[in-house]
Image 1 (cartoon, rainbow, N blue to C red):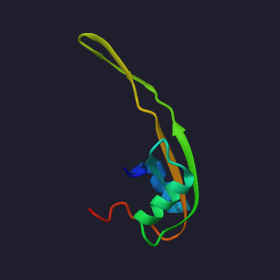
Image 2 (image 1 turned 30 degrees about the horizontal axis):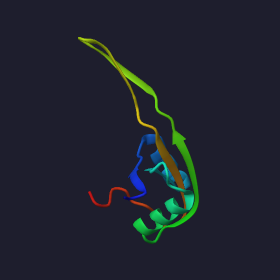
Image 3 (image 1 turned 60 degrees about the vertical axis):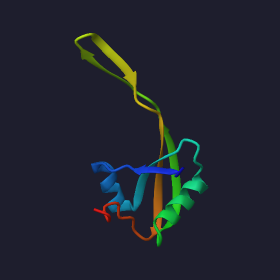
Image 4 (image 1 turned 90 degrees about the horizontal axis):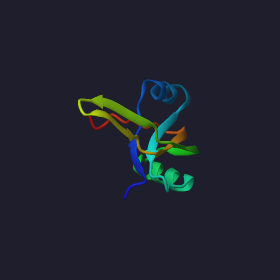
Length: 96
């Protein structure tokens, strides 16, 4: 199974990506910083990773009202990795 699950792309993260060269990925909860660095460098050749910061995003309660009443649940807990690149560039939209 791959360590990198998917890239996270929002307006704020796109701005940070363009200005500071930091890319954000959703990764497996058990992944370590050296494993994330190696996975990014193998998946995107020509990219050298300078630094990896990780944080675990806690689950949040979510709910909605339906005809049968309130349906409650929670979002999933996931780990986010912010990868600083010293050389190279990652293009998420190259396959489109």
